[in-house]
Length: 91
Image 1: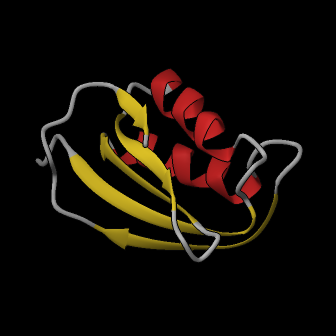
Image 2: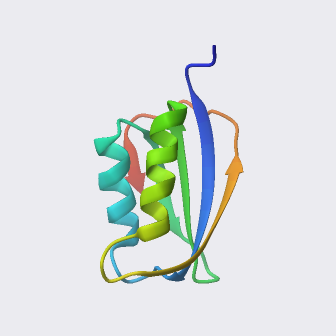
């Protein structure tokens, strides 16, 4: 049984300048996930997280909604390689 998985999401819509990365950080921390969130030059937010599969699914569900001021139009999800990280940072 694999204890830890990793996923990467690319979130599009009105997701920059609305606190989306900090929303992702708060949700991931609440779910005891490790990783990071950063803005991309094309207007999307990239989120990487590692942890238990069910908690990654919970984070994914939250990313589809985002903070109240966001307007999420799309979320692309990919499996990724597990990295050893401590905490969840905003980059």
